[in-house]
Length: 368
Image (cartoon, rainbow, N blue to C red; front, side, top):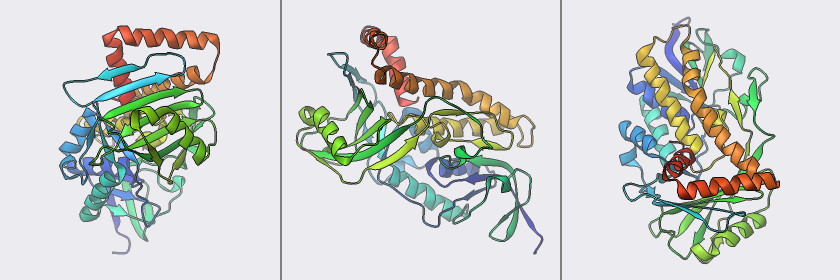
């Protein structure tokens, strides 16, 4: 029928990792969900994710973890170094891995395939923000739709829209992500190195011979391939041996901010928190966003007037904690004042001596 209106519970804008996982989690709860993506061919890159214990359980519940193509790489040790303290901090966990590293592409291919098979995905759909208000008729592929709730799982373009006010923590950074091969076994060890230009994280990747790692470097500066190559060699030649950098390096803008309560949209995932990509914080917090939303649907009907406000109230404390954690750390290391160095040394020694504090630090670093 020409005037028929397709009525759905949720519209999810963005078919990335968090958007597709949100759709699958809500569909499992028997909600009627549609995902739209503005591209016809969704980019699938070779970056990695550090998946903490909670996120692993979430993927297991969706039946995804067991069908990952590559075997997840466990992290059994985390070494933290900086340019102020002589001795590194070493964190180990003999009971279980301190997270697992997987390829983005493996996970996204699975979630997209599931969406396609369930007919929950429409690609090459371009809509303006003011066109997708909840409970309003929306034209998609020349057909009429109505949605009770609108979820935004994309953020780099949306957050620049003046409709969405935000509290900005700093003037922004760049994130550089890439891979390097080495001739020594990485021994399932992750590294966090606080340089004067920004934090550098290195994670073991899911390759059989344990001789390839990925790096994530956040900085205010625009850097060349040769600078990054020099940085990796300087910090990892001793531990990893002969190093060969992959030519493909991804660069992303980061502008840490907090999204305020919005009555029309539910923001979900790291793209709207813009957390520095240290050990998978943003990704793991994105999974918690999904879990919070799903739990909320068990307690309130979707047409409950305060639904969005309750969602934001449940996420604001943890989001602020992690956002502040990374931003404050970066500011301390980047500002070379004597008082900052004193604070860093005090914190470093406290971590070395106090086990509960070390456990809290690792919890924050992994976004648990």
